[in-house]
Image 1 (cartoon, rainbow, N blue to C red):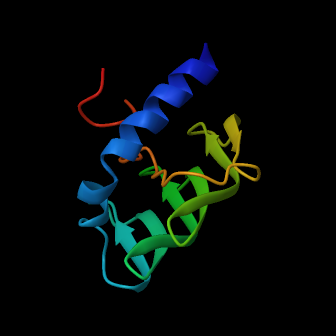
Image 2 (cartoon, helix red, strand yellow):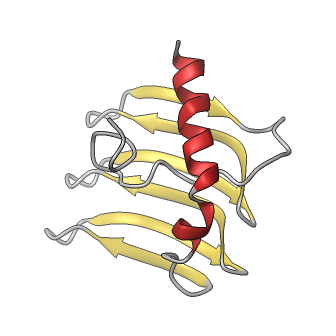
Length: 116
């Protein structure tokens, strides 16, 4: 069941790649902050695509997710953590060579915005 949900979410993200890419910051490393000043997201953009390690954080400062990209393509092992640091999910992209997947969007609970 988890695999079906994951594939469904991946398909949704593939269809929205162009819209999401337009929301990326300029090329280079960046940091976004929560309203309370804690880091929300760290990442890198290269050739207008996600690149390198992207990390999402809870408002408490605890890591929420770690994703890796190579010029827009998911690579390595992605991990999602609970607010207390427990590993919740792990997805292995080392053998996937097709498609442009993007992160789930907001690091806030609820998954992809607009999808219920």
